[in-house]
Length: 223
Length: 223
Image 1 (tube, rainbow over the protein chains, first blue to last red):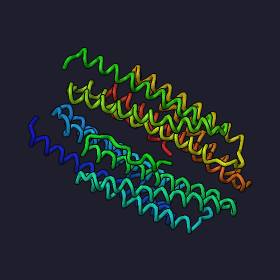
Image 2: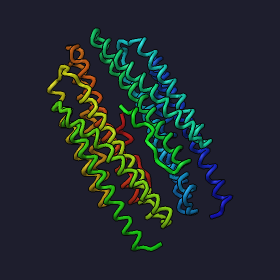
Image 3: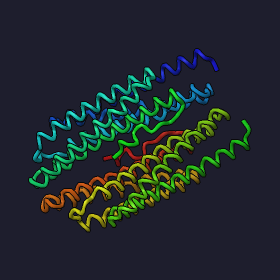
Image 4: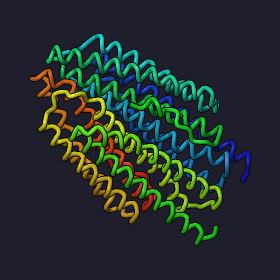
C-alpha cells in the first residue's frame, strides 16, 4: 500500500464526511427554524436540499469502497474507512429527520399553536445542533474524550423530549382544539430526540476508532 | 485469497445475519403483541432480549472486519461483506424500535384505550413482520426482484400509518381522556412505519449486491 496515497485519500474522505455533516447540521437547524416560524418556503428548501445530502453519502460510499478494494488497508486504516461508511449512514438519517420536520411544517394548516411548547422545541433544537457540530469536530480531531462527553449530553436532549411530551399532553387534554398541532410537536420532538441518538452513534464510532472496541454509549439513555 | 475458506466464512456470515434478523422479527412481533394485549411481562422480555440482538450485531461486525482484513476481498466479495455490515445496523435499529414499543407498553398505566385503533396497529404490525421475514429470505437468496417488490409493499405500511394517525387525532379531539393513550398509538405506529423504512434500506442493499449500484427505493415513500 502506498502510504502517502492512502493518507491523501483518507484526508479527502474525512473532509467529505465533515462537509456532509455540516450540510446535515444546517438542514436540521433550518427545518426547526421553519417549523417554529411557520415558514413553508424554508421548509421546502430543506426538502429539496436533501437530494444533495444523499448524493454526498453515495460519493462517500463509493470512495470508501474504492479505497478498501484498491489499497487493501488493514487494522487501523481499515477501521477508519469502515467508520466513515457507518457514520455516514447516521448522518444521512439525521438528514432524513430534518426532512420529516420540514414536512410537518408544510402539513400544518393554521392549527392552534402552543407558543411555550414551540419555545422548548427551539431550545431542544439548539442543543441538538450543538451536539451535531461538536461531534463533527470530535470526529475530525478523532477525540474520544470529547465523543464521550457529547454522548453524555444527549441526556439533556432526552430531558427536553420528556418535558415537551408532558406539556403537550396536558394542553391537548384541556384544549382539544390543540390536538393536531400538539401531535406535530410530539413528532418533531421525537425526530430531534432521534437525531441526538444518531449523534451518540457517531460518538460510539469515534471511540471505536481510538480503541478498536465498540461501546454502547447510549444504553441508558434510550427511551 | 483462499476461495474455499472465504466461501465458508461468507456462508457463516450470512447464517449469522439471518439468525439476527429472525431474532429482530420475533422482537417486533412480541412487542406489538405485548402492546395490544397490555402484557407487561412480554414487553419486559423484549427489552431484555435486545441485549442478545446487540451482541449478535457486534459479532457480525467483528467477523466482517476480520474477513476484510485477513482475506482482502475485492469487487463482489467485498461488496457482500460491506452489505452485511450496513444491513446489520438496520436490523439493530429495528430491534431498538421493538424495545421502544415494549417501553410504551410498560409506561401505559390503565389509560383509556381505543380498540379500533389497536386493531389497526395489530394489522400494521403483521404487515411489517411479513416484510421483515420476506426481506431476510430475499437476502439469503440474494433476490433483487423480491427486494424491489418488498420495498414497494412499504407503501401499504405507510398507508396504515396515515390511517392510524387520522383516526387517533379525530378521537383525541372528541374525547380528551384518550389523549395519553392516543399519543402512544401515534408513537407505536411511527416506530412500525420506521421499521418498514429500515426494511426498505435492506432491500436497497440487496439490489446493490446484485447490481453494484445503490438505488433509492424509498424516495417517494418517505413521510
